[in-house]
Image 1 (cartoon, rainbow, N blue to C red):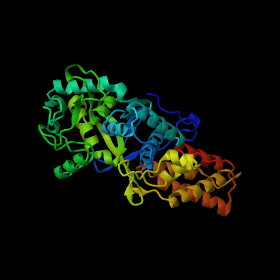
Image 2: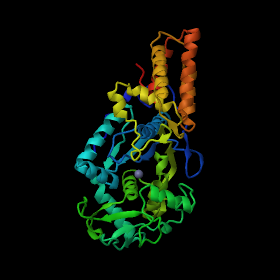
Image 3: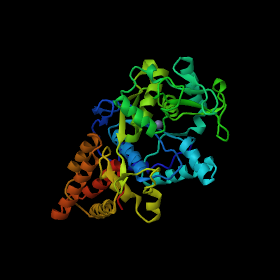
Image 4: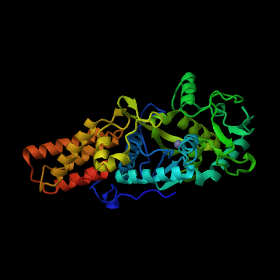
Length: 425
Ligand code: ZN
């Protein structure tokens, strides 16, 4: 699948846009519950971030996640690393099919139109595109191959049909992975509750454990399906899709597996367990599991099911500069839950105007310390609000006392563009 246009390469770190180099990046790892260094000392860092299910346009919650991992990619590049980044699109899944059915739109058309909007939003937000951007539809053979491998290894089983459904849906026994539960660290009661809430089917009869996730769903009437040898016609489960794509295109272990905090369980827990059975010798699936916070509106988490979405495309259509939206996002810590309000947008607009005016001045105080401070803040668990505060301080100092460094405004502009991804006007 085509991704989206990349920002001007000369505006990115690692391309001579900034003097010197950033420090090694440390990030909060959900599994360790602590900050850990992420990425190698030199060479290539690998990143897998779970993509959208394209049945509704990009909302601020998505934007928050993809901007967070874009900050990571930029900090890695600034530290001298190459970045290998893969993202999927869950372009066939229950919510997409249900929405298509409810609105009378072909599921392929719905997915296509929403992926197109997502691309435009990501590009407008200056998010560096993944090197590989893959829809499940184009990876079905890969995913069904992984399911067959699990069956052959005794790490999958078939469940008889219930309620008139066909026999043969394939499930993964969570008991097969001794480290199951180590990503999220949840107790069993919490796992059961989250499974029911987030796409699992703990009530389904015939499973060995209520937590066991679906690997392959045999075709039901009217549902899209693909031939998959001994699995029969059907479609893949959600978790195995990401595992199969990540193993094929990044290998294992992945340096960082990322996504929103609502993906910790079951999605990332199950994805890791699948990988541990597919490639036991290369455990763990990921060296770090990183989870971004949720964005709320009117006191409630923004979600498609609640319908309280602030869409990036709608903000753009209303004339909001996407760079202002990005500045609003990076003014919040990537792991914190925060609320989108008119006040947040107003503050971001004002800050953007102040910063843009400041970098348009002929001189200012030296900006070398600012560059070092922004680098240091971002390497410390992507503390973008700390970096924003450092830029605020420079802008304030310039307005209070001027400064005679004629190279400083341009260095500030480049720092903000390269490391925060905010292009000042
Ligand atoms: Zn995923």
